[in-house]
Length: 371
Image 1 (cartoon, rainbow, N blue to C red):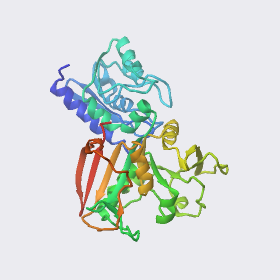
Image 2: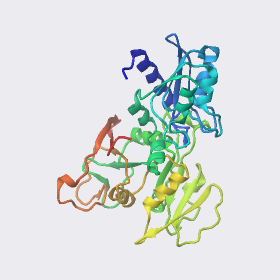
Image 3: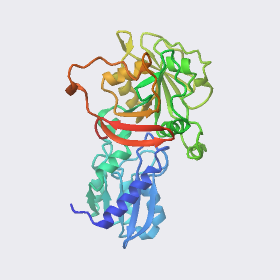
Image 4: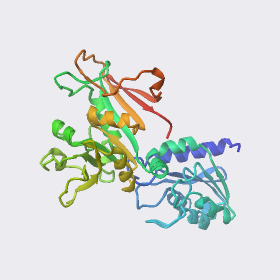
């Protein structure tokens, strides 16, 4: 279909609105909606938080009686089922809109074309596919959970120019400057969960919480933004409960071997049993389990051992590297522990998505394939 300039303009506006929910909507997707009558925006909205109205409802409320005969632009197919809120497809029908432009269909089996069908059966003109690629980019975690039954996994690494994460003696704080560390807080805030290990928690006294290190992050900590679920691989349950991890923040899930009998879960701590093979937890089983627990986006902050395992098992979807302008020299600890390749062609080619200067450091983002 050939989209008009107006269609493109209003869908771009809906996409921008959807981004405003990226810190709060999980496990729901980010969605934006714009209602237009006679070429003018009469209502707009975005999904704020799970359990609250969806984007279309906010837009229709603002439009009021002006929704009659209007066009609604929405970044994701309107829902068709009753959950904590009613079906948005029926809300659009009841409001009397005459046309709906949808960026992409919803892969959720509870919707999956049913929302469009409701609209069409009501005589509403429906068009799908405008800025579909951009709409998918809004929700890689939600789409991954629905389409692959596993979260979208983002591996965070910090290294020197020569690819080292620490000196030979283990010293690593701080490779990067305050601007890069503040950016990590934003990435954590946009993540549904953080994955790390008991070793990292004990060695670094890591809290793995979202903290106000910049003016940009401070408004997010007003009680509306969630603290990500902190998921810690603790195969032998070595953590004592006295670590800083347990003193602040949101939920904690301790992942242990299914050969151990865990204590009774006690908020905020929850225990997840996972099979092990050759003394290692089954990471693929864990990702499927986390998807069943409605985890969309998984941010990984850990040492080279877990990072290397995830990489070798091809479980990394997005790589984020903060690179400092330092050379640590011979004997320094490498970024990852990987087996040597015999052919350059065997190395997967990643696609650069972002390169950004953060103070003295560089942030690099790459994906193996687009979400």
